[in-house]
Amino acid sequence: MFAVLKTGGKQYKVQSGDTLRVEKLAADAGETVQFNEILMLGGDKVVVGAPLVAGAGVQAEVVDQIKGEKLIHFVKRRRKHGSQRTKGHRQKLTLIKITEILESGADKSGVKAAVGAGSVAGVAVAAAAASKPAKKAAAPKKAAAEAPAAEGTKPANLLTEARGGKADDLKKISGVGPKLEGLLHENGVFHFDQVAAWNAEEIAYMDDKLSFKGRIERDNWIEQAAKLAAEQE
Image 1 (tube, rainbow, N blue to C red):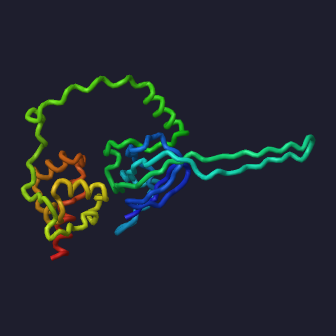
Image 2 (cartoon, one colour):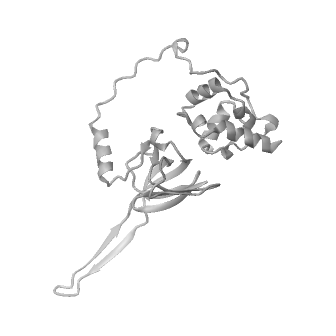
């Protein structure tokens, strides 16, 4: 699927995995930000905002803060003294990589909103960060035995590797991008039938374990996975 987002006064059509340059954002390299001004969602079903798509969002990882190509501006005044001047300018940009497109629930994701570094909101974010007191030294970690267990029950059908050495394309499940697919693989989930077989307690476990924030139920992963598994038979 794709989305059309708005940032820095421009519109961009993006898909999961795309890398693009946008007007400078108030964020550091490595941070994950979320664009909330979504004008359109496309895929199996096209949704056009009025003017924005309610609850939709696009999450991206900030790769680096960069500058655009140098532009030369030549100024010449014909009258009076005939002065002339040459100026150079390089626009400040942010390089981002699209990690996920959310059709709904973006307002509850808890991910930092993407705001321009030169906007009023961006200045406020920077000022707030500068005014925060230094963090106290972290308390020593509790022993593993004292760590609270994840809610729910660990799924019994987790695998150490994909069956036959070939995993299903979990990105076909709506809301699953390359990053989430990688997390699922790391935790023993490689096939649609594994997801389709989860019960309520196992869903709660995976939701808490991978910090999905209710995404499994919100995006109907179980129904989608069951349908995709049936199509493979």
